[in-house]
Amino acid sequence: MRELKIPAIYWDDEQAVRLLAEYFTRERTRGDLFYSGAHFERLGGGGDAGEVANRFDADDLVAVSMLGVSPRPHGAINLLTDPGGHWTRLLSLIPRDARLESPASDALMKRGGPAWELWQRLAGVGRPDKPDGSGPTVAGKLLARKRPHLVPVYDERVKRLFERPTTDHSFWAALASALRADDHAFRDRLIRLRDRAGIGEDIGVLRVFDVIAWMYQGAQDEAAAS
Image 1 (tube, one colour):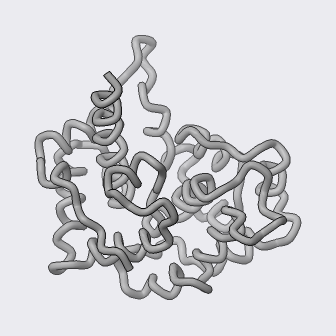
Image 2 (cartoon, rainbow, N blue to C red; image 1 turned 90 degrees about the vertical axis):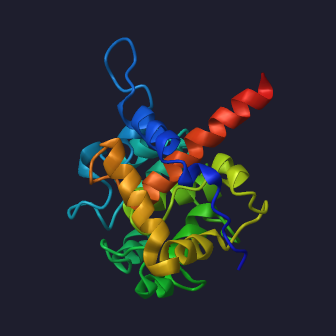
């Protein structure tokens, strides 16, 4: 496993809090939220709500579109109708309250575990029957919607900030290790940043982690391009 090196932005309270507050509270001139992704975990009561936790529904597809990805139409139908029964089967094996920072979750996330198998089937790794238009990023965001305390949003922008390899199958384990280190010091820091930003306790630690990375690296990319 490649160790996760935590960038300095996470130790800069003022800037990290500002990035979180901007993402979750900034408004457009018409009065709605500027960043559509601010609705990702809250839309429809959340993808892990009891009545929908073990199946994909239309709200999940809209939610991932708010993060800039979508399966193709036939792929969306596959996710909603679950013709092979794999989506409900695997989601049912992943507890709604599973948390990445808990060692008890390792069995879910490791190769052969239900979260890993679900990601593989959605990402199309060796799976000719994957949903049309799905891939590693779509798969990760769908899992993050359904189990927001277990699976982090992980895209190219986050990957650049953390200088991860192009093919990265150890990110979950590396982040889990970082959250557990030093008696959960990094996890507790993320909670404090969330509380200072005033964005709501329903926003999980993994989403705080992702949003700080995404916002910060986005600004870096924009500065480099100017």
